[in-house]
Image 1 (cartoon, one colour):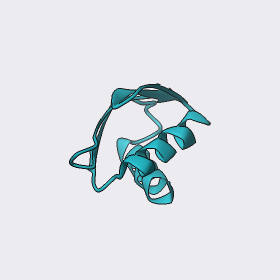
Image 2 (cartoon, rainbow, N blue to C red):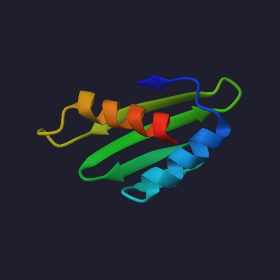
Image 3 (cartoon, one colour):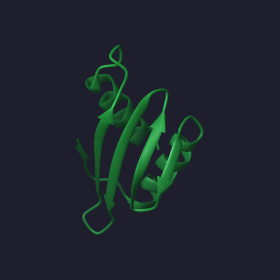
Image 4 (cartoon, one colour):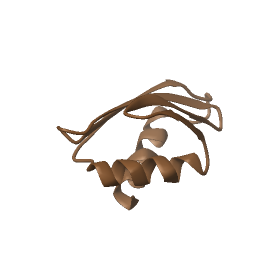
Length: 77
């Protein structure tokens, strides 16, 4: 999934918010893991684009729910 625009301040706030419930590694690119979900992310500051690829999730959590939560988190950041 791709989310734009994500300002550098919003990205920093999002990473802090996510780190309270999951392990977040990396700076502009890295991995988010928690609650059985693993996702890779890449942030491009010049284009203010955040790309997230869910690579593993429990069968009872659909990818659409994960993406919805991420979009909500970006909006709240």
